[in-house]
Structures are given as structure tokens and as C-alpha cells.
Amino acid sequence: MKIIKEKSKKAINEITKAIEKGNVVILSTDTVYGLIADATSEKTVKKVFEIKKRQTSKAIPIFVKDIKMAKKIAKIDKNQERFLKKFWPGKITVIFKKKENCNLPKIIYGDKNTIGIRIPDHKLLNILLNKLKKPLTGTSANISGKKESININEVLKQFKNQKMKPDLIIDAGILKSSKPSTILDLSRKKVKISRIGAISEKEILKFLK
Image (cartoon, rainbow, N blue to C red):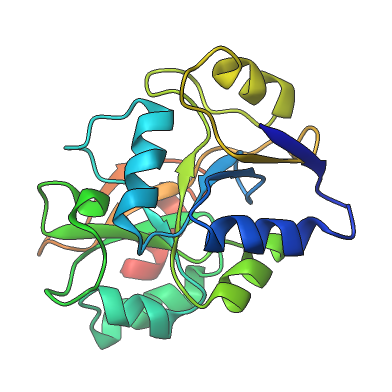
């Protein structure tokens, strides 16, 4: 595992090249450390699952650069788009019905016809999304069943003795304390909050009324 500091001048170029090569990167996000990779590459996404030891039947969310990119992947109506403009970029992952021709590997969404999408409120991630012009995996950097973390040392301990490891680690130290993203399911007739996280239920319901 190669480790470089997030504030290094070469960080953006290193990360971009790594992702273009199909590598998996540990990177800070606006919530916790994440496993970031090209979400359009089946081989790369499989590698994320192997590193995380995640069951392939379980979907993983993705990061996109803007609502336009999200609409290429998911079925989003005008009311939903107004909601997204209120909360994105931000700490809320929204589940939509996916489009049939979304051009993402099946392993991303597992055995479901839905997909979780988010525009992060994070400068480095947004730079990468704009440079690469493709969705990126947005799953937390932890072994499945273990706790996600804002501390790079805690993250590295989880992967230190694993056979499958991330290729590149971007060390941003200890991140600002944050809950994981809230998960809101808009794929069904009745809106469902699947996980309360950084965005409160009160904030969401206030806007949905």
C-alpha cells in the first residue's frame, strides 16, 4: 500500500492516475474515509468488494459529479430533482430506481433494481469527479462488519494484515467528526429513511411536506 499525504502537491495527479489504472484508493470524504474507485469498471468494483470482504449481493453507493450525471444512471423526476438541489452536495445518499442502460456493472447494485447516489460536499472528491468525468464508488473504507472511521490509523489497521489491500492511501489524518451519510429511499411510492445519519429526519421531512 502506497501512502501519500492529502496536502501533497502530487496528490491529485497520483489519485487520478491510480483510478484510471483500475486501482482502489483510500480517500477522505465529507463523512468518513472511503474506498474510491472507478464505478464503471466491473473488474475494479469486484476488487473493492474483495478488499472490503463484502457480499456481492449487497449493493454499494456511488459518487457523481452533478445531477446531470445522476440522471444518466437513475430515474429522477422533477420533484426529486428539486429535493436533490436542496440537499446536494451533501451528506445524503439517495436511492432511486436505476435506468436499464445505466452502463454500470451489475455488481454495483447487486440483485436490486435500485441504486444509491450522492454528490459529496468535499473539495478533493469533487475535483476528481470533474477530472475523471465518471462515477466513483462511495463505500466506507472498512472491512464489512467492522466500524467505519475518521482516523487514518484506525483504517490502516483494518487492512494491514489482509491479503487484498487498497493500492493507494491518501493520508488526511483525523477527519472532522461526522456521522455517515443519511440514506433516503425515493425508489418507492412511500418515501423511506433507511438510515439516519448526518442529515436529520426533521430536515428531510420538513422539505418533503
